[in-house]
Image (tube, rainbow, N blue to C red):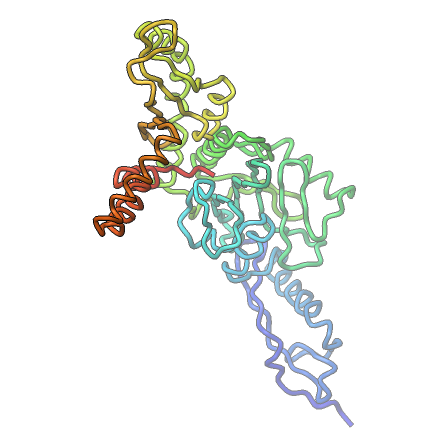
Length: 405
């Protein structure tokens, strides 16, 4: 009895990009009554249902040969390729949707699992082969122990005929080229590596770490972003022969507002450098005027501040000294400067004799009990412990605090 064949709608259509730049769609398929065999409608040769992809590729090869060209790559929805590329660069998928911000300056990173990452991405299309996408990711990553990483990834489609995976990607980080069907010590890897040496990308591709140097890391991140953003195209290899192909930039999450955010952070560096250069002379001038700074800014504190740890910059000024005996006009007050928040705080160190204070308190309480005003006295004491001035000071410092971690 002859095999009965019927349409196989579960075999989804596939679009394929050919080496001449055209796109073709895979033909209709039909399956046997048992569902174990499939074939192209109109053909007599069938194949096991688990080998559908192999049959589709063979059919596409025949269609391409009839046009005098070859199969280059399967066409996938852009969103699918975006997701694969983001995963390969260890970047959140939201990088293609959310505005780019400097996450290092925020203690909360929202609901995304970005772990303090700021990821800039640029997308490209191969000239003449529009469905082929390429990506450049530049990542500023804050990790444990105040270590910061700046890393660049270049990612593009693997279009070798020998590949097994239709949606395979090359992932280049400056030291290794990774691919699902690319053998590290094989001939194709060596030829691809040689191509990248002969045709270096117009920006460094590497990974650098900066221990405790937030500002330096941000500066390097900003420099790399500007280098990549200045380019309208990059050249990457395609096909079995690794033909150099221009990829034109299409979109990016790197914007003028983010560039301004980086500059606002980075350009405080020259200001701190000037503080460092002039600080010793400033101390001498203070001493000449009789102003004594007790908490001096050390060279180590300045170095940390230049790298972004502004909480180290502070100073305390005592009152003028009358003579060398230590007697001053006002021994109880100091003025503290917090350069991280621009806050000036006056501290009162006045302390009465504890015995005198206790004795005065008992007398006041006795008088209040006799007059029936003890409740009023206790309420006053509670208010005295936290006067309005202290509450206002706490509020000001809280409002002006700058969190850079």
